[in-house]
Image (cartoon, rainbow, N blue to C red; front, side, top):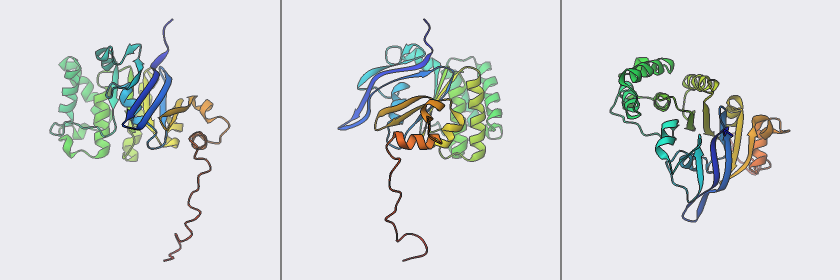
Length: 258
């Protein structure tokens, strides 16, 4: 039987000294979906994505991406995935077009195909006018878009994005969103992390909620939301923050009081 899982995680653990970042998670992410990995800051999202994409070795557990073990068959996995990590470091002394040319050739694509795809991606992501500008002079939104272009250039089966909309202006965010929706509509899989529930609710059709290094819930958006009025409300209950005090004792704050 052919697996329908884009990603399969079993018994994944990661510790940093005495701090447990990821505590033995098991998770299967379905193929062909727009998937959100959500959780509060410090939940373990970035650590999990780093292990899933082969950037960080786990202490225990296994990860398969489209049927290939990340650590036993890393070349096959990396050929099938695109990654836009948080805090991506780019080759800043290259222009945007040069960066895409380098990325495509590194992936083994023919030069003519790299040039064609780069031109198309630069146009769609509204970077054509800045393609010859050095990346060091790109804004935050432009950096996210050129990083996304590099991650998509080889047409991966699964795309991993860590906080792709963080620090991005609304115009760039809308452009990125349109490209990702087109990508998943073709049958590919997007896995992205976020702590902005409104964004996840508007984009995703499958969600995993993470807190304190563990998966608290996973499934379709409707399954995770359950009877809650919104994903935000369901999320707060799942991570144990539904009844948290919002500052009732700060009676000195506001109104110009000193």
